[in-house]
Structure formats: C-alpha cells, structure tokens
Length: 207
Image 1: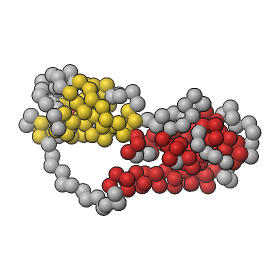
Image 2: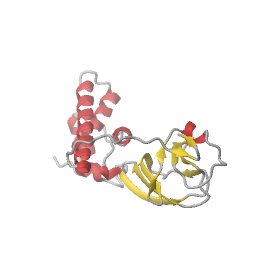
Image 3: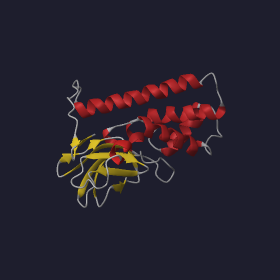
C-alpha cells in the first residue's frame, strides 16, 4: 500500500488495526500524533527565519512558534535567559538587547530597546495533515513515523493493552531516529564540542 498522503494514512490505520470504523476518529489520532511530534522533534525542516520590529520590552512570538533556536540584532546574538532573570532587570535599562526570555507567548528583552529589527530563527509547528491539506514534509519524508504514531494513539483509544507497549516503543524509536538524522544533516556526522560559556554583563548587572 502506498503511504504518501492523508487518505493513504487513514486507510493504513484501518488496515493495520484490521478495522473499518476508524476513519471518523482518524483526524483526532493524527492531531494527537502531531502534538507529540511538536514536543519531541527538532529538525532543519521545522526551522523558520523571520524578522520583526522591536519597540519595547516585549514582542509577540510567531503564531506557529514552538521553540527558539536563535535571536539576534545587528549580527549580535541575544543570550537566552529565564523570565525571572530578565524581569529582575528594570525597564529603565535601555539600549541594544543582549538577553531574551520567552514567556506567555512573548519575547522579553533586556536592555529594553526603543526600536530596531530583530532576526528570529525558530522552530515552527509541523503543518497539520488533514483531508484539505493531505501532505506535508514529515509525511513525505517519514511516513512510517506518521503511521506508528497514529497507531499508538489508536491503541490508547481502543485500550489494547497487549499491543500498546510495542507500538509506543516503535513510535519513540522512530522519533529518535528522525532527530538523529536531523543532527547528521545539520552537522555532517561531526562530533560536537561544547564551547566555553562567557557570562554576559548587561548594564553592569550579570545575568
């Protein structure tokens, strides 16, 4: 059986479960699988580069944002920090931001910029697979992951205690393989070395 799009996936779910009544619940199974993908997977295909205008201490994150990779302005990267560390620095500290925290759907900067353009590289949600949008990059590249993740959700739905551990283990194995493949794609199989970290100083106050 071909496994190239949403229709194929729904047919495969029915076929692998030896059922004919899972079509109506399939959108929920796929959506739950995608929720797990968005929590676990981090691949180059999920990365988006965008720009935005800063005009104060906070900036809304993109609508499809699920994680920050980097953020910079004028070729200077901001140091990721906790929201407590950022908000503990008063808004009276102004200038070029050097610290950023993500909280409540917003980026918070210190020092507080009066203006400027920021470049954001972030992880975006995997485009939802639906009857109206029958394919996406993940379905094209890793159809086996979509199938097993949906089957795992179906086993929860049907409370098939005997098969659930096997299907869940295979789903987790495939997600790990996808993340490992992403690392090889990004770094070419090289061994990464941890760079020494220099603590930033912001307006005389250390992060």
